[in-house]
Length: 354
Image (cartoon, rainbow, N blue to C red; front, top):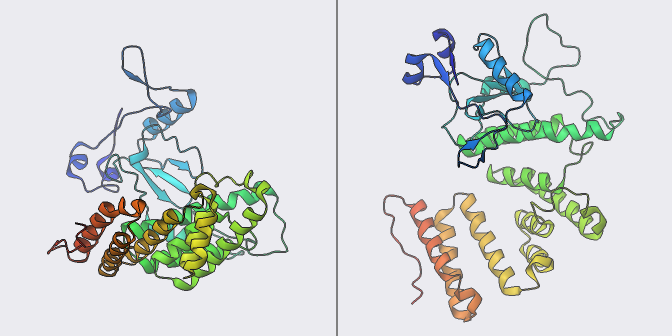
């Protein structure tokens, strides 16, 4: 599908010479996006009226008027995924790719995102023209009642904050901005008035940790410990907790204890995990790998490599066949860590297992 775009409009969305020369948007319109093979082996797509509507809107506007998808939908973008850019709680359709084709990276208009998420408007603040900004009213006021339907919206708002924070942590390596985004989320949407699931609490704790905000990280790790313990003590609640299949309760608790620096409690949770079948060797290996991963996440690659070498020596001395089976993986990990610590040298100094 191709759409002609005015040159002055195309220049606002890309610096790619190919698009600036052609001034044409071209993408594969896939309807539902769930292609299936027909009897001849050809990939076919279901195209319903809702998909035709999207196609017609993009064709008719030609980007002379803004076109958006709302956040929190079913994320079926009819093949426009690479052409989307976050602006507040909406995704703008752009005439040129905003990310490398086929990747899953979120792209943001940082100026608009900051205006919307980090600079909340006062309750009495009004404008006579279009203006970016949200009013987070009574989302930290325990005297105001919200029913379950409205309470569920809070996680949708939080996910936009989290996507934006991940953008700075993973793509921009801007730890201070990551912390600012997370702090704003927790200020504007109270985690007390609108409690998070244990999985979301853990994600926030982990992101704070990776960004170097240890105080906030430990605060949320403590929340994870309490939330998971409630689920462990009340098994019936696990049936309605939607994240239990994606993040094991005991593993989340163990990793929260790791953040808190309480490795004995982390190991105890690992041992309690029914998935581990009380296998102490397996739990020890998991804890060891958690400690290696913790140092790696902090960028302490040399320390992580040294710890890996010590663990290799410990496993060799044990003679345990389960530990011995992990030696090749650990030795490879030590090599990888030393390469990260000194990319120019890339010398393998890991312990020899022979």
